[in-house]
Amino acid sequence: MIVRFGWNALRLQDLDDTPWSVLDAVCTLPDATPGGWVVQILGTKDHPTLRVRIVAMRKSAAATAFKRLKNLIHIDELRAFDPDLAQTYLLAKLLGAVLVDALRTHGPDFSPYGFPVQTDIQRRLAYFPNDLAGSSDNRPGLRQSE
Image (cartoon, rainbow, N blue to C red):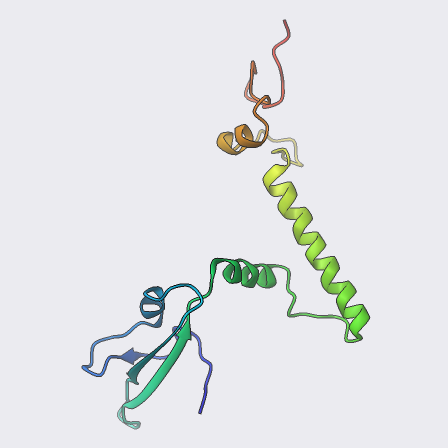
């Protein structure tokens, strides 16, 4: 029987009764490589200890970034069931994610409420090396007049 469960849903032990962690085991694997372990689920007074085989795979960095993106833009909440409408909906969500990422990484630091913003100087210098040159006050982009 195959059962999918969360990484912290069960109290697992090695066969020698020491605590066992799925995350610790998966971290020893190379990216996108499955692994298998024989462990046991801790029993209770009403249920005996159960020996099980855990099969897990460490996601690649790209798969992890995509899984996070799916979670952030709520792709699991598909509002359209017609294939053409579903494709349009998904493409709109992805376009929105690309635009937000572009603004986050390349856009200016600003506050919509007019409060001073402490900028990430290293990021600004990487993308806009001339922004901070000759600045006379704390706001990037302002040049000292000569």
